[in-house]
Amino acid sequence: MGSGRPGRPPNSAETVIVSISTTKVVKTLLEVVAEDGTYGKNAAEVANWLIGEKLRELRKGGDILAERLNQAQRQFHAETGKNE
Image 1 (spheres, rainbow, N blue to C red):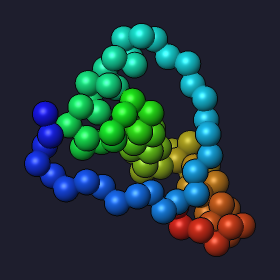
Image 2 (spheres, one colour; image 1 turned 45 degrees about the vertical axis):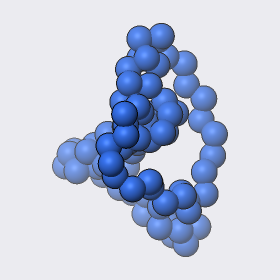
Image 3 (cartoon, rainbow, N blue to C red; image 1 turned 90 degrees about the vertical axis):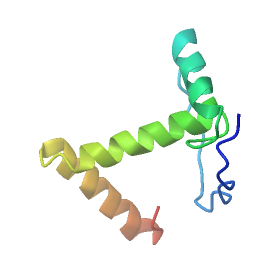
Image 4 (spheres, one colour; image 1 turned 60 degrees about the vertical axis):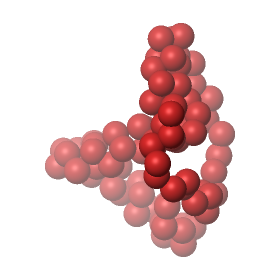
């Protein structure tokens, strides 16, 4: 079932745990996406990738939410010196 793509390098970013509850069907769909490993090797990694992609999309929106997200990211970088 592999995609033939090389494995991803380990995540060098500091991580924190966020718990979410979802339906069984969403978990199943995340597992299906994880089968080839392109977006993560398990449901949690795929969910993390999808959330990150959606946040990047929202930050490009040009509305008040986008500005608030961009401001939060700038503040994070200023406070931590980390570029995640």
